[in-house]
Image 1 (tube, rainbow, N blue to C red):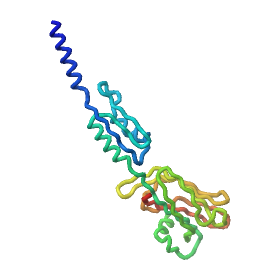
Image 2 (tube, rainbow, N blue to C red):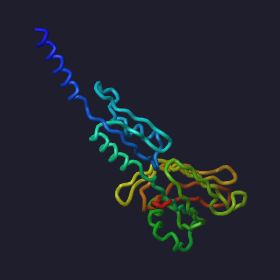
Image 3 (cartoon, rainbow, N blue to C red):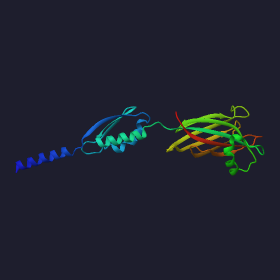
Image 4 (cartoon, rainbow, N blue to C red):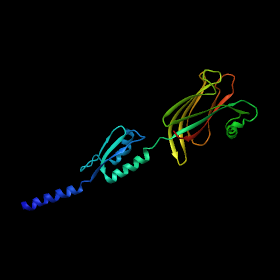
Length: 224
């Protein structure tokens, strides 16, 4: 009986060894995303609580080293290839337009005038100023438009760029836009704007003696 019991223990031990996963170690460079972002993406593929051969993950500033099964390492490689990419940038073309009563049509905003007439009831519109700003997701930009902010003509344009989503060749960008005059008056809005389309953001009377000012924007994807 003792001999038979000993053989059983050896058999069970061999079976346990066979069931342990075969682990490999691989180091992945991080080019565009930070280590804490990569950890959240990779975590589901690293089985730290595996009873036999737990997965292991460690980070430096620009690398992640993982000990896991070959299949899981391949999954991690595909996930990092999808997410460790440059953040898209957008170029924002702003137009500041004055609704100034009757007058000849302004050819510089001919493509926008029909939309303005659908939204408002003013007689005429003229382009006052333009500004182009660029930035990545979660960035902030400020720029004078229409002249120096200290002058009688200038305004300050501020833009908070939020999430940028790509859908094929187009996409959406979340914007928090505010425009103010030297006298404190201004307009502010939050929008999700589609790239390649001009969107009217709002209107306000920003200074005494001027007409109502209308702000429009057209976002486009841009290279860094």
